[in-house]
Length: 259
Ligand SMILES: NC(=O)c1ccc[n+]([C@@H]2O[C@H](COP(=O)([O-])OP(=O)(O)OC[C@H]3O[C@@H](n4cnc5c(N)ncnc54)[C@H](OP(=O)(O)O)[C@@H]3O)[C@@H](O)[C@H]2O)c1
Image (cartoon, rainbow, N blue to C red; front, side, top):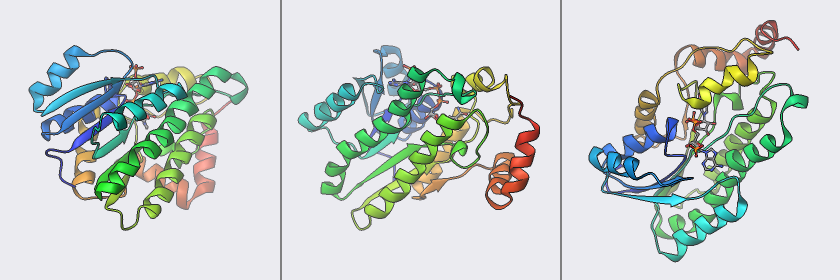
C-alpha cells in the first residue's frame, strides 16, 4: 500500500511510538486522524508542518467502552473515510500477579485489547465496502517471549496477535489487509515504566531503538504489504530461542528472576 493521500487514524498519537508513526505518516503526505485524550493544537501544527495534508483530532478515553462506541459512531455518521487504522494506544501492567492492582489490569485489557477489537469491528465494514484498507495492530515481543511479571500484559499482546492473524484470513479477497507489529523495546515512557513495574523481581533487558527508527521500519512493512513486522538484532535472537529452544529460554529467564 502507498502512503500518500491515505486517511490514517492512529490511537495514542500524542507521544511515544504513536507520535513517531504520526510523524512518519505526516511526511508521507497523508490525512491524519489522531485519537487522543486531550486537545493537542501544537501537535496538529507540528504534523502539518511535516507535510500532513490535514490533521483532525478525535477525543476518546479508550478505557471506556461508551467512548469507543461514540468514536466509531461519530466517524461513521460524519462519513469520514479511514483507509488505515493504527491501533497503537497501550498500557503496561506488570509485577507478581497477586500484586498487580485489579483496576489497572481491567483498564489495560480494555485499552490494549478490547478497544482495538471494538475499533476494528466498527471501521472495517466501510473498508470492505470500498475494497481498500489496512488494519495495523501494535502487539509486542511479549506476545511470544513470556517473562515472569508480564502475565497480564503478555496475555493482552498474545491476544492481539491471535486476533490479527485470524482477521487476516477472514479478509481474504476483500482488498483489506493487516499488519501486526511484533514491537521490540522502543525508548518511550512505557519502556521506562518496565523497570519500575518489573525491576523488583526480574533483571530487565535494556535493548531498545527510538520511535523514529521503528516508525521507518513500519513504513517499509506497509509499503511492502507485510503481514508481520518482527524485530531485528538481539531481540530477534531472543525471539528465536523462545520459539525453537523454549527450555533454554525458560532457564535463562528464570536465572534473572526471584520472587
Ligand atoms: N515501548 C516499548 O518498548 C513497546 C514494546 C512493545 C510494544 N509496545 C506497544 O506500543 C504501543 C505504544 O506504546 P509506547 O511505548 O508508545 O507507550 P507510551 O509512550 O506510554 O504511549 C502510550 C499511548 O497510549 C495512550 N493511551 C493510554 N491509555 C489510553 C486511554 N485510556 N485512552 C486513550 N489513549 C490511551 C497514551 O495517551 P496519554 O498520553 O493520554 O496517556 C499514549 O499516547 C502500546 O500498545 C505498547 O504496548 C511498546
